[in-house]
Structure formats: C-alpha cells, structure tokens
Length: 350
Ligand SMILES: Nc1ncnc2c1ncn2[C@@H]1O[C@H](COP(=O)(O)OP(=O)(O)OP(=O)(O)O)[C@@H](O)[C@H]1O
Ligand SMILES: [Mg+2]
Image (tube, rainbow, N blue to C red):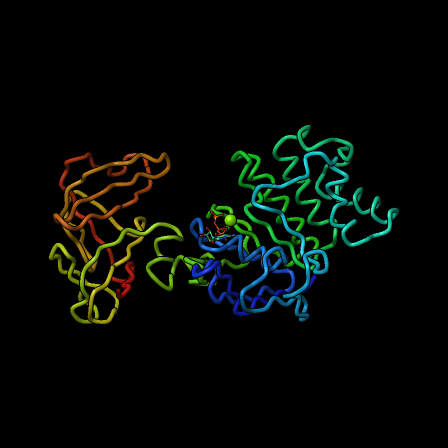
C-alpha cells in the first residue's frame, strides 16, 4: 500500500484539454471517489495514473516514487476498466493471472495467487470457466480479482459496478468496500452514482471540464459547495437568478426581493436545497423569506414529493416534502406560500 500523489496532471489531444492541471493526494489506505459529468476527464485521469495514457505534463507518484514514465506493468496499480474488459478467449484463472504474467511472477506463485484472489472475491472453483459462462456480477468480480492479484499499491476502479442491476450493485459495493478496508488499499473509484459515492468514499472529488472543482467529505460538498456547479451536481439545488444589491439583499430576475446570507454586489444565483424549503397554505411565520406562489407541477416520488412552485413569471422553485400521513400536499393550481431562512440558501456570484 502507498500514498498516491497526482501533481499538475495535464492531458491534451491537439487543442483540446481532456485533463487540465489536476492535483490530488490520496492517503495510504484512503478511498477516494471521483464524481463528474460524462466527458469531464475521469477515465483519462485514472488511465494516466495506471500508465495506459501518457500525460502531456505533470507527475504521478506512488509511495513517493515518480512513476510517470513507467509502463503499466512496471507500476503497481491495479485497474478495473469502465467496461470490465475481460479477455473473452481466456479462462477466469488466465484472466486473473494476466498481470502476474506481465510481471513475470514464477508459475507456482502465480497459481497460488490466482487461487487466493479468486477466493477473496468469492469465486473459488470458477477458474476454468470462460467469461461468457459467468453472470455480470461474477464477471465484475473477475475484473476486480485481476486488479487485486498483483497486490497493487493503488487500486483504480472506473465505474466498476455500472453494468450491474440495483440489488447486485448494493451487494458488490459493500464487498469492495470491506475488501478495501481489510487490505488497507489506497483506492480511487469513478462513479456516476451519488449514493454509491456516499456509501463508499472517505473523500470525494468533483471534476468538471478537466478540472477539480472541489475535494471534501460528502457533507462538505453538500453543505458548503465551492461553486454553482458543485451545488447543482452534488445533491440537488433549485436556483433563482438575479442580482445581489447589497450584502444580504437579493433581487430575482422576476423582481422578488429576498433576504440572503452574504454575497457581493453583482449578478448572482441563489442556490436553495429543495428539502430546506417550507411550504404551506397560509403565510409562514418566523422565516426570513416567505413568498406566495402557485403550484405548477407535483411529482410523487414515494417517500418524498416534489412540488414545483411558480413565484413570478421568471422565478420557479422546487420544494421537496416528506410524504407524511396527513401532511400538507397541495394540488396543481393551488395557491401556496414558500418560506426559508436566509442561512438555507447560498449565493454564487456570476
Ligand atoms: N484519444 C482521445 N482523443 C481525443 N479526445 C479524447 C480521447 N480520449 C478521450 N478524449 C476526450 O477527453 C474527454 C475526457 O474523456 P474521459 O474518458 O476521461 O471522460 P470521463 O469523465 O471518463 O467520461 P464518462 O463519464 O463518459 O466515462 C472527453 O471529452 C473525450 O471525448
Ligand atoms: Mg469514463
């Protein structure tokens, strides 16, 4: 196991920057999750760490040693690819042995390691099968075994659960997390699934357009998003666009005057979490903001209900309420009041 240092990593394809100046430190034994929209550079970053893509600039250090220019098989990084990329014509055991052969591990050691690793992912006895004779979840675990067999200093997982159904995903993610903790593996995982990120990560990294936007715990990212992008990407936000007229005074595009927390004068967006808003038939007392509106759309989510409220021709909000028995659930077209404390919102200057 080892600390991973990614220093000012850049990948250019012609004029296009797939990754621009990414720096991250992953502590020994830490589980870091990369989150970000499609095309933001997550896979490119992982592949540069693993050695499959040569960086245009920057360095990768594993346990303090600079491995930037080493080929994949000379750096001790195990990678599970976005599509599990098993060799279809090789058996499970041959797939798992692949990295060991590349590293010229002697045959008896190799066989023992393959057995051990298959046991680790609970696939004892499957060594002789071909990938197509396995279920999706089993193939996923073979890919994981292949990455683990080399006893990696760092484990790189690129959406390792993306092809599994919801139930299997939940099982395999607990298995991976337990294995990672038991082995103290330094791990970087890419996922699109926020719940997955939440349950697995020690820390999260949000990327956009090739750059790191914020690093922190789920709570940091949710409660104190660094910018409007993170506010919209982690959890859910509903935005009102307008202007900060003076610190604490926000005027929406539709002309509503609101009390906000801080902000510097100028064009801005007010970000609000739907579950931090209150809604009632009558005006709400004791809140910094309370506005009348009309319900435009109601979306029933089971445990929760989303209510889209029109506040002015230019201003619309989403309020999320818990689906409690006997709770207030307005209908489309109904007049309501929406309220919140200034501290529930966050202002992002344009
Ligand atoms: N070989 C290449 N040549 C040119 N552009 C590339 C190449 N490989 C990747 N890109 C571009 O680099 C950007 C980052 O790609 P990358 O695969 O890292 O995205 P990603 O964050 O993993 O996305 P996804 O979530 O869809 O897997 C994309 O815009 C992609 O089109
Ligand atoms: Mg990708």
